[in-house]
Image (cartoon, rainbow, N blue to C red; front, side, top):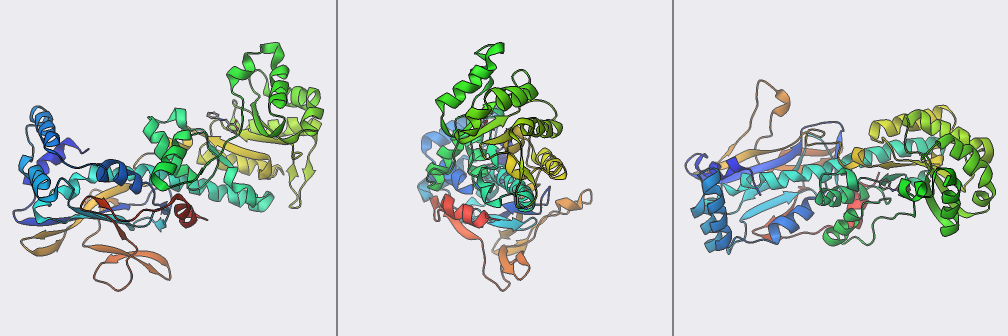
Length: 446
Ligand code: AOY
């Protein structure tokens, strides 16, 4: 679980190196605040559950002999013999769910055995993978802020939890990513179709059913009825789910005909007398104009009323969900266009797949892990990089702590005044602190 070149690094530190101390930060990307999330999963799945054994060492030696021709066999046997195979490192991190401004330290790691100075940065590869859950949780929280802004002006902010539904399972690179990203979205919302995220949040964060969904059609269940029987497919949805929420994708042939004539005339009375809400889902076309045209088309026959805030809203039995082409930018544009045309944000929920879980990378928030202190022959020294070719890549110096001031979090040297918000979560092979999903949600609350 490391990069090839790292197996060569044990020979590259200065002679007498006893401690390598490194830190993890966002060097400032798309947003100003980071939601820290996902370390506990990585620690439990990949570090705590695992011990070095002699067969591991032999397997690694064999693999690396042919791959790179270098391996620190003696170093790993030392971990096996002196530490019973447990990794002699200390990891400190801000509690998960904490919202921390960019450029602050989020996590630190150092070796606890001077013979294992090389182990600190060996673990960079694995630990930096927290960039993904941190970025998903951070972006999903920014989307929540935007939704809340429009709900505050035009509708019902109390409905926020179900306004951004995770459609992303199929659009991510792996089942594991769906689990991690899906759980990260659930830090901020409760609507999801990514079951892997629920399973992960329950298993690694003691969540108790953190996400919910509703019956919903897909194109196959509508188009199987035949082109001229779309209305029967819709009616069947109402008959099969006579109460509560039900979502029906309605663009198989002509979304506007479906809204005006099928929903708006043929099934109108059934929808209005129904004990629940039918959610019409467009799934094609330019999302900005399609949403307005669908609202207009539904409004023609169902009518709209002005809510207390003065914005048009469809009858409570009828809503829409836009799940095609949604990323943070498109969601804001749609909400803004609705607002300008007098439509309440109460009319709509969003689905997001690739835009929520996959259209981001480590540079979205510029996450980096860098050494900031070493001890060599008993002497502690600052370590940093400061490339003339990119001042944004300048790294922090020294041993750090994250303190809280009147202006919020601040990263300072660990010799300065103030309580450290970094908590030791892992030491010598053991997880020391576990956060629950409820605590994480509470910390990340807006
Ligand atoms: N789900 C709300 C519940 C979910 C979905 C999942 C890809 C839902 C659709 C819906 O209403 O329409 C993965 C595309 C859609």
